[in-house]
Image (cartoon, rainbow, N blue to C red; front, side):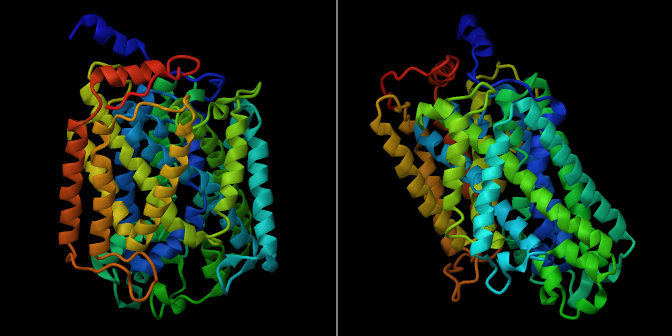
Length: 554
């Protein structure tokens, strides 16, 4: 290998055009933090306690460890190539178009659906003051609530038209509030703590380990932690990104884990014992069910805290919906840079805002208001899409370590040869634990996504190299996970009888997923793009606009 080729690796990097680097360390960290502290903290603690009682605290700790590993992988990737919509672009560089299409679609699906889900959370909490916007019997918004949700999403888009330096100030104020209110709730509710609540109903872990694993995606725990990757999505606008981006991700994740674990602790400990005769699954208090922390505060005689929490229940999800609208427009920008989507999506205004991507995020987000008119009904699907997106990161990192080992990496994941495969196994387990009802719906959405993105290839300017050889593992991975989920133990919904067969015994199913995942991981490493082709894709995006060029099928 020539020294000239190696030197080119450290100098050639993808570049973004039209965006402005105006986001500092705190702005980048708070972009991730405001995504993490959203509606998840308002509902996750209740759903987790209902699923596994006092053992819910273990779920938040387990998920915290999982998220730290995935976040550190993203920190290495984002610092190495700080570009907008990074999660949609790393797999493109590592494996080419055939694999990149899938992960790009996962990234967009995860991001574009968060604003609607946060709007649902706002409506559910606001129904305490305005009952006509939410029907507690059906767990759906009403017609009035549906209209208000659309208005709220339009506000998210309007605020996003501010220049990044101004938008960051708005987001920073919102995020400081979003951190302060959960901390206030934790401190106050600690004075109402009852340790006996952790075995309410006669068991610390009703349902056993199987219920513990199922609750990670189903109770919204993984969903609550998602969002740390927002710093990667905004990497094209972060000042000194190679230094600030990994620090931002690590800071945001650390704060989020501490807050969520403490919230679960005080939620369980502060619950009045007379409501727990049948355990947490038997709670029927309508105020707690419709607004868990605010309802709990009211029940224990803290009316002032309940009022503050209900105000926060509007601000907190709104801040998350706001930043995810930002992230969606940057992912669409990245997809256009990959030549997966029309170049129109890269257009920016005088403030450096990708305005076409913002408007498309609003329009496409409206479709997700129609079939899933409640918070809980969207969580499983979005968690699955999020984890599929996260799975692309350890694959990309492993490929980059082999393709360009000498490239500059301002942050290097320790023990990457071990943690890379482990991160991929973890992602697959989270998908499996989501259950068959979620997995088969994800499969349908994925097929639709491939059809939509393939239709763009009718234009000769939107034909990136497909590199089929480097993506042979991908259909085997997706179909294999589907088959294991169908034959496995986790239904993932309330359908009776359950749609999964449960033929693979519990514990053995985890072994099967782990072994299968390792096979796929090392297969992907063996068929990654050759170094020269990978560098060619990076070089293509180092220019103002990627040249159409001939299609290369590897």
